[in-house]
Amino acid sequence: MKTLELWHEILRERNLDRLDEVLAEDCVFLSPVVHSPQRGRDLTRFYLTGAFMVFNDSFHYVKEVADEHHAVLEFVCDMDGIVVNGVDIMSFDAAGKIIEFKVMVRPLKAVNLLHARMKEMLEQLSA
Image 1 (cartoon, rainbow, N blue to C red):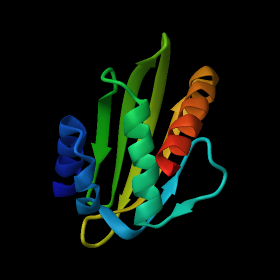
Image 2: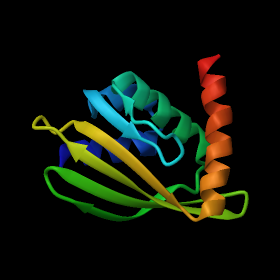
Image 3: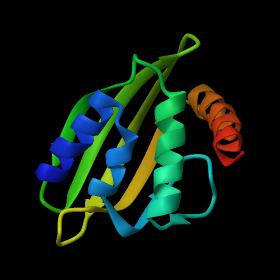
Image 4: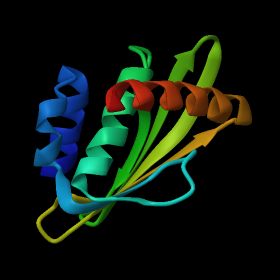
């Protein structure tokens, strides 16, 4: 799937300017730490940018399951000695763009750390 190839390329190159190539205009972002869905490409890009800046070079995918409509990518990242384990769940529209991006994280220590780091980063990005 071309969108997943582009997604991996964007991550590898850390080229956030290319996010619009994979995100549908009406994409919805579902965060593990924000209660309500974040609607629209701009908000999705905002949260993904924050995540890119919070996760370090140890972030990598360990499993991927995909078909033409959905993908589940399991990731691992070490943050301050805490292993963050989670999944990115993507749904694609008819054009192949990401229409929904859901992130789930475990264990609780990782969720709490990620919440604190994302809060700081999103505040910086908003300034």
